[in-house]
Image (cartoon, rainbow, N blue to C red; front, side, top):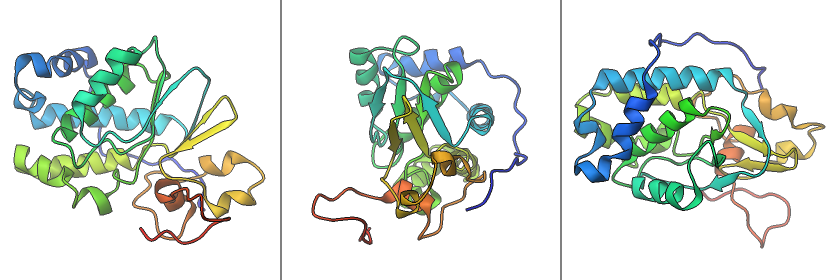
Length: 235
């Protein structure tokens, strides 16, 4: 485990108009066209740079207070995200903690991650986005996100920008100092840890973590009612 350190990033964007992009994203269905048909590569890169710096300013374990709505895998289902907001409520009236896996598999990975980024930038303390195992190059290079970006924009530049963004995302959230949230599950490395401060000790940027490691467990571990203690995950 390495200590947390400051890193310089390649982005130096001007302050973006988040409300402008949110309005366009909210109207995707009404307009009958995808968001990325009316936004260019440089605008998305600016959004990524702004959100990346926000992630960098926040800890790797985000502490928050209840009440909060916790949301699991999204996988490019933009319509599901909008339904959740319409049923449960919109930030900042409702606080949210998302557990990762925003991209891949679904048809609207780009729109999905962009609207979540914009809401995060508008309400940074009310809206928490954790990293999932699909926010790693090992997975999203082959499960659709890379191909989606290449099809839409014809260049790998945005994929590399998104990769740098994902490498800054927090891995865990602690609700009310009692409920520990992550995309995957617990790790044997946590059993003997005297405090949860170990979850704030990761260095950024965090590239795809090695196996075995605490970070890979937080992203990949699965609960199993038939297992006592820990054992190797076949995935």
